[in-house]
Image 1 (cartoon, rainbow, N blue to C red):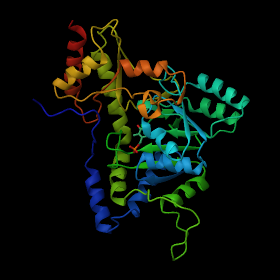
Image 2 (image 1 turned 135 degrees about the vertical axis):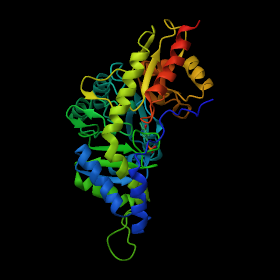
Image 3 (image 1 turned 90 degrees about the horizontal axis):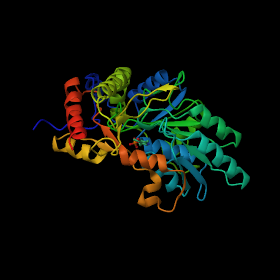
Image 4 (image 1 turned 120 degrees about the horizontal axis):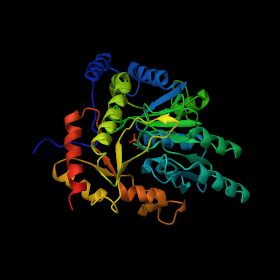
Length: 377
Ligand SMILES: *Cc1c(COP(=O)(O)O)cnc(C)c1O
């Protein structure tokens, strides 16, 4: 049997190893050094978001965002139900009450119409959320300007969970640009990686300075250890940042390859009735971090799960769409606004192997198995 084909493994360019060696040579084998500065500079240059701080993970970035916005026990935080748990986990750690909103079937991201209604209702009863966290899912931006405009009416800040959206465009901007604060992930399975790692970004310098301060144990700038707040140890290692610098250089090429992989799957599988793909929103460019297909068992003689099992038998990794947060046992009883659309995507959706190092032959091999399993009765 051939080597396992993973869903979205790291894809190094070769430069990273040289940059890591450079970091070693400088002896900044620590969460400080030139590579961190270079990584942040490359991020800001690429995204156009003026200020950023490189962190240990996207989850750490979200935790700092939650802290920066002053979210406290009992505050409501609203999030997309179709997401990864790290969108909402840090707010829950701070004692916030999560409320989940369904996604728009055309974009799979937080539904602005539902949000508008829910905010109006919340304003009437005087219980507005302390923050709204939309997710840019599978490389597709949420309709950020609309969401921010709706939240602005009520003075509610937006944290963009753009963890899956490095390289994604929203209108003429990078995904996340326009939120009060945006977070990104460089986890090993994302479109580019720093082995692990995250970024918090904003046009508000004071906010990002505060994040940097909290990320380094809230240490005051005096020679002894002086603290006016309790912070975290959340900075990224300079060694990991070196990997990130190398990856930023190839990000655009990685996005192009992911989009080409998506197009090839779509072409290969177009003869199949009952199989469709996650649409691209008209307002942006999806990075197609993962190719996601939907199987309609009423038309295709298959289910997302039967296709997954067929791929698994050939040593190919695929994965169901994110299980919505309101269906998670840990959030049983949480308020959900809508939810049926996300549930349907979870039932019918399958993420196909999408790593940018895949060859066209790999895509065709996966496609053959999908074709066979959706045709056979
Ligand atoms: C990956 C991911 C995160 C968390 O990022 P880490 O770097 O793994 O902590 C947060 N939100 C979403 C939607 C993600 O996909």
